[in-house]
Each structure stands twice: as C-alpha cells, then as structure tokens.
Amino acid sequence: MKESIVLDVNGQEYSLALESNRLLVDVLREDLKMTGTKINCGIGVCGACTILLDGDTVNSCLMLAVDAVGKKITTIEGLADGDQLHPVQEAFVNHGAIQCGFCSPGMILSAKALLDENPRANELEIRRAISGNLCRCSGYTKIVEAIQGQTSLK
Image (cartoon, rainbow, N blue to C red; front, side, top):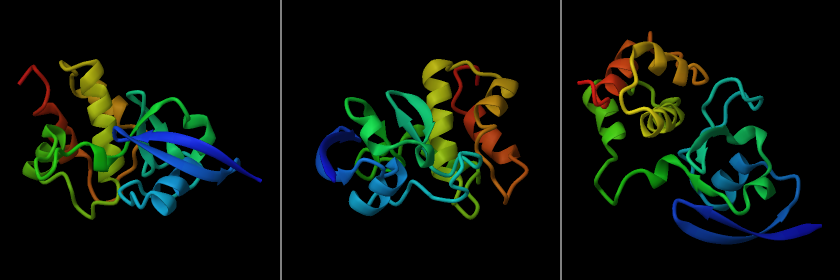
C-alpha cells in the first residue's frame, strides 16, 4: 500500500505516493530524477549515496524515504545556485579533486557538512569527516587540499 508523503529536497517540496519500504536513495534517483546521489555498495560503507539531512551527512541507501518526512534534504543538485557552483564544488574542480566523479557528490556533501560545523577544520578533522566516503581513483591528497582551501585557516 502506498503512503502519501511530502519531502523537502533542496528547498522544494515534493508530494509523493510511495511504498513505505522505499529507500531514500531510490526515491531521489528514480522518482525525483536527482541522479547526482549515487548507488554503489547499498550497505552504507562507500558514501556514494551521501546526502545532507538537516545539515548532517546520511547514507541515503540506509534510510527509508518516509523517515525523511519533515526534514530538509540536500543533494549535490541543491548546492549550486543556478550556474554558480558552491565554493566547495568549485574548490574540488580547481584542485583537480574530481577524477571519475563517482564519489564526488558524497565527498563534497561531507566536506560541506564539516565546514558548516567547523570552518577551521585541520587536516586530521578533514580526513575523519570524509572517512565514510571511499574514492578508488585517488590517494585523497587533492580532495583534502580542496577542502583545506575552504577552511578559514587558509
């Protein structure tokens, strides 16, 4: 049986009729066509499906969509302002921190959550904040440099 819900995604409300067992990652990608949120491991290990829920990082592959009702969901599509990239997105581009791009949405959202909470994060804090996001293309150096470039310590 379908349940009627409203999700607040990137500042816009979406009314949906969903089965109560639908995962948030599937609703974002399939129903709302926000394919920036990636699906990879499906068990909350890789971070490819990371979104922000009321500003906190969440693995959307582990969350039911119905559990996100009443919360503010931010996906990678919600960071840019039209053609203007969010500063963290721009830093990733400028530092060459995007290689294949598969991990980038989750990595960028994890970085944003960290910098919102701690704009003076040091390298160790940055590495801890992104530890739930796996990148198979890099040694993380350029990713960490991109995030460090956004701290108020620069």
